[in-house]
Length: 461
Picture 1 (cartoon, rainbow, N blue to C red):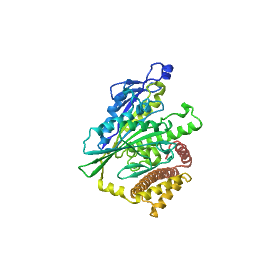
Picture 2: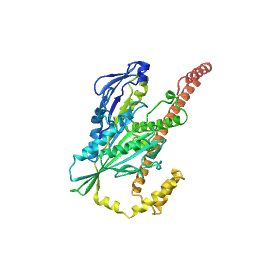
Picture 3: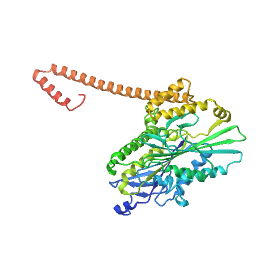
Picture 4: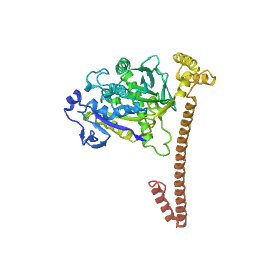
C-alpha cells in the first residue's frame, strides 16, 4: 500500500492581481513542505504536503519530483496516474502542457511533453531482449460524455472494468507511437479539438515482451488535466457557459465525495465508494484506491483575492493525501494473449461493435446497453469481460444494499431511543400525577400547573 503523492504549486501573480492588490500575497513559506495561508479574515491555516513549489519554481522541478518516479514505474509495468487540480486560471494547463505542446524552450516544457521524452528515454536504456510497444488514447469528459479526440464521431465512449486491465475505455481509438517526435505531433494536432471546459485525459499504454520469458507485461500511465472549479456567482457565467460550469462543479463534487468516502467514511459506509456517480470518478477508479501509483498537483493562486478558492483546493489535497493505493505489476501470459488475438470471434465482434456505433446515432445510451446485452445473450456478441462486469455490478448492488440496511438500522435505533425517552417521560408524568392526587385539592392543582409549565421548557419532562 502507498499513499497518493500530493504537491502544491503556487503560480506567480497575474497582471490583474497586481493591478488590484499590488504584490500582496496570502501565503507565508515555512519550508519546502509547509506553509501558512491566510483567508479573507486574515486567519492563518497551516498546510503540509510532500512538496511545495512556490512562485519561483520551474517546470523541471515539478516533473523530476512528482512525475519522473511514476514514469519509471510505468516502464516497469506499474500503472501510474498524474492529476492536476485547482480553480480556473490557477496554472493547471500550464503545468500539464506548458505554453505549447511543441514548446522548444526546455525550461517551459510542461509535464506532458516531458513524460513523452521520459518514456522513450527509459525504453532506449532498457535491455535489448525486451520489445516495447507504446500506444496513446486521448479523450475528454465534456458535459458528462466521454469523447474520443482521435475520432470525434465517437462522442459517447463507454467506461468498463476488466480484472486484468482495470478501467478501460471501450472502443476508444489507440494509436501506436514509435518515437518522441511522432507522439508530440499527435498530441499537438488532437489537443486543438479539446474543449477548455472539459476534463482532458491522456492515456499511454506500454506493453513489454521479453524474448527470454514467454510473458507480456503491461503498464498504463494516465495524465488528467481537470477542468477548473469556479464560483458561478463570482464569474457571472450565463447560458451555455453556466451549464458547463454546473456540470464541471458537479463532477468535481463527485470526486470530492469519493475521496471523502475513501478517507473519512464511517465503518458503516466504508464498503461503498460512489465511483459510478460521475464519468470522471469512474475513469479514475484505479487511481483512487486501486492498482496505480498516483500523484496529485494542486495548483493555486497566491493572491488574497483568490484565498477562498485556494483554501478549497488545499483542503481537497489534504484529504487526498490519506488515500492508499495498491500498485502491482500486471503480467499477461503470452499463450493467453495469442489465443485472444487469434480468436475467430474477433472479426464478428468488431462487426457488431460497428453496428452498435451506428445505432448509437439514433438511440439513447440505455437502448444501446440493452441491445448489447441482447446480442451477448443470443451468443452473437462475445464479451470477454461479461463475467467481470457482472461481478462488479453484483458488488455494487451488495454494497449499496449494505449501506441502505445500515442507514435503516441507524434510523430504527434513533426511533427506539426516542420512544424510550418518551416512555420514561410518560412514566415520570404518571408518577407526579399520582403524588399530586395524594395531596389536598388546591396543592395538587397548583403542582400540576407548575409541572405543566416546566414540561413546556424541559424536553422529556
